[in-house]
Structure formats: structure tokens, C-alpha cells
Image (tube, rainbow, N blue to C red):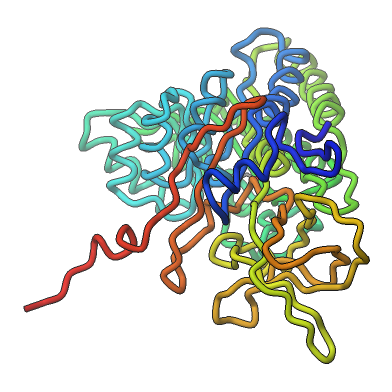
Length: 427
Ligand SMILES: *Cc1c(COP(=O)(O)O)cnc(C)c1O
């Protein structure tokens, strides 16, 4: 069920009119629905509980990079979520939001020594290591601290996720993970390093997958490796199948999360019972987009309507610096007028004020709008605010979390002075 819907021609977030939010907090503004966030998280968490033997045999680790606002992280932490991070900064966010570092897994190809130290000091659950040089560096850093680092290797199962090339990560030519053929060698290396504990295996083949077939194919390859490792005396405690299912931006029909997890656990449980007499091998997930994507919109105001010779433009006050996805991936986002009008619709490109031709949010949309109208850019909760920049010295948007008829400002709008506060002029 969508938590953004029309009532008497006005678009609401839960029980809050979006026009009230614009009046009180201005635009552009990201608006998140608390109920939608919790519902989306529960789709994973409930399925995990349903299919796992006990509550310690699975863990949902929300992917922080999809939306890292402290209020979002806090809400999910209280719902029992762990976290998948890709930087030291994200770890500090999780901690500031009240998340438990012992439920944190650390992904990414380029972890620095400082980031490793920080994560070790906070006793995170596991490092998802992506190369042999990273194993050696982590071993050194852990040794110097007198600690042991729990590691999982990110293997690249060479499965085609059939998604956008920029968000496909499981093919041989990608920079991510250890090649499937090199995985055994990498595991042997890890097992021989004195300050590492080899605990898991993970893979993440891409984002916005609508079908679970590639994920189940990746799982089969991961299972095969776990068995090979077991026969060599390297026994793993968890497997991590990476990010979540895709979402509906336009007319996509992604597989239901519960169905996907049902098939995945059926496969895993059958294997566990057959090979390991049901020994608990924990299952981890790293969903991001499917938890926050459809739980957020970007609220913007039409500044000008430009009727050109071959095209009409709706120039709005949000831009590529606020929502990068269209410029970066040619991504499609729905555009809904906040107040429905009876007047005839015209076709517009919805564009921002930034000085780039790539600065567009939507193309060729039929909209009945006038200057000063409010628009909602839909499905903008994931990879929206976290990818925002200050290009053109534009302060980043405010963020609001709606809870029923209440609105909470969870990040104030950046002011111009915030943007140059860290700069200085040499004498
Ligand atoms: C980005 C990312 C995720 C989240 O993917 P979604 O498609 O947003 O669920 C999970 N794991 C890793 C390693 C990632 O880089």
C-alpha cells in the first residue's frame, strides 16, 4: 500500500498534506513516511523470522548508503535492524543514531587503515573483504590493536543481474569482490593470517533486480563454495546474499520480498539439513532501495513554465544536485502534482536550475500545472539525499519524516553560509 495518496485532489504523506509541509518548511524538501519505512523493513524481517530456526539465525543489515538520515537509521535500529556500511562515516552515523555496532557489516573495495581501526574499536560484526591486499592490511591493523577481525569474503559469482550497467556489480569485469575462481585461494590466505577470523561469505550482484532468479543462481554458487571450503576445514558461520529486490518506479513489477525470501530460505534450509544436519549457518541481507525507495518523495515547486518551439519545460526548484539519479542513470521517477487541477495537461520536461543540460528530473510528462504549483517527485527515498551535492552552491534540501498527521524536521535545509563555513582565504 502506498503511503502517498490523494484525498479530495490533494496529495498526502500518510495523514499530512504535502502542501502543509511546503508551507512550513519550504522546497525542495525530501519527505519520508515512517509507516512505509517500517512496513518495508518488516517485509524482510518478518520473512526472516518465519523461515529461520531461531532469531539469531538471520539478520537484516539495512544498507546505510541508500538513505543515511539519523532518524531513518534510528527507526530501523529500534525495529531490530543491523547495518551494512561502506565508510567510517557511515559507522559513526549508525552509532550516533543509536544503532548497535555489533550488528554492523562493513562493505566496500577501498577501506582505509583509519576506517578499519575505527570499526575494530567498535567491535563490528564483520568486514566484507573484497581483495587479498585488503586481507593483509586488515590483518596488520587488527594485530597492531591486539584484536582479531571477523571477515567474510565478497565473492563475485559472475552472474548477470540484468540491471543498469552502473548498478550491476556481480560480473567478472566489475571492480567488486574476489573472482569466483580465486575465492579458494583468498580463503586459504585469510585462514592463515593470525589476526583474522574467517566467519562468512557474501556477494552482492547488483541493485534494482526485479527477478530473483539471478539471486538464487548466485546463492547456488555461494553454497557450492561453502561446501568446498568446509571440505578443506574452513567452516563458515554466515552467508550474506547482498542487497534487496528492486522497486516500482514506473510499471516495473518486482517479485514480492516475501516470495523471494521464501524461495531463498527453502533452498538454504534444505541444504543445511542435508549437509550440516541443520547446523545454524546464519543468513544476512543488505537491502537498501526496497526499504526506503518508495518511502520517500522529493517535494518541489514549479518556478517557471517555458513553452518552447519544440518542447515545454517546467523549471522547478529541485535539481540534479538534489536528485542525481536521472542525470546519472537516466532513471525514471514519477511526477505527481500536489494539487490536482481540472485544466488540460501539456507535455513537459521537468528540469532544475543547475547550469547543465543533464539537469533534468523527468522527460515528456503530461502535467496539468501552473507556475508556483507543487510537484512530488516519487520514489525518491533511496539514493536521493545521500547522493545530493552542493553543486552551484545550492544548499541541500530539508528532510521531513511524517508520522500520521505529524511532521518532524529530521534535517534542516542547508543555508549558503553552511556551504562555505569550512573554507578560508590565505592572507
Ligand atoms: C548498495 C549496496 C547494497 C544495497 O543495495 P540495494 O539494491 O539498495 O538493496 C547492499 N550491499 C552492498 C555491498 C552495496 O554496495
